[in-house]
Length: 310
Image 1 (cartoon, one colour):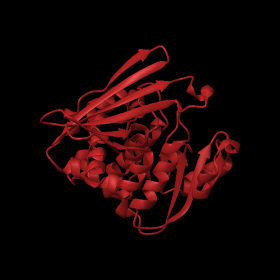
Image 2 (cartoon, rainbow, N blue to C red; image 1 turned 120 degrees about the vertical axis):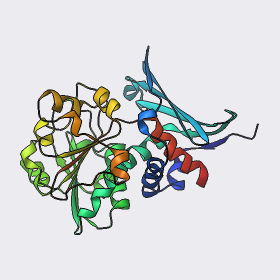
Image 3 (cartoon, rainbow, N blue to C red; image 1 turned 135 degrees about the horizontal axis):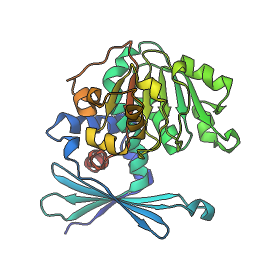
Image 4 (cartoon, helix red, strand yellow; image 1 turned 120 degrees about the horizontal axis):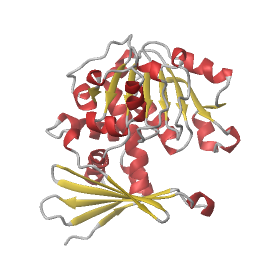
């Protein structure tokens, strides 16, 4: 067997730009692969928390992400989530590459959001205002990916957090930091062209009437059918794009709860494959919502591009 390659955190971010990660996902969607055929992930409880097993197969590769979530790791000064990504030859199932799973997740999650909404981004022909709820790796990752993908400049970037005093310097370098649930946040939302929610919230983060028509909203904070970051009323007149119909109806609380509240019809949901490939187009004056909860194929699509360039 050939020597197994290892791509650590530094190698992941040095090898692939955010825009290239977005392109890798859209390339996968443009091919024969359909996310509805993705292999379901498995979550098992263990003493420290839980283990997540996320296998996928696309083309010449089989990949699997092994994720450990230890709820007490923050008290130990360790990351809450540990992960490795294993790449296998699809024919022989020989292990070829091991990738730092946390770095891969940090790169691919915002790339998924942008790949899902990218066909609608041409509605912005002036500098845009961006509001991001959350200032962790996914919050900053979304800000970086938006900046790398958009053809226009960012006029203003705001990170909304519960504890501004705990925000690190790299977040302040990217934009303003605002205290959650303040008049200043409401003002920023009213002006926002793009809104990202990347939090652990279980209840809506803002009121629907603050969001202007034509805004693009990306929600990626949860994969729990009982939790939501967005208010149901926001879905009433919006176009809603999802990774996969069965996945979102099983895991996407924002969508599940909006349907149960009568604000959204499941038959109106658009898959990101259909939207990305131009089978459905968006009215530039209509609010666009993308709800993602993460799927196994997304890691493999980005990992394949990483392996090809490394």
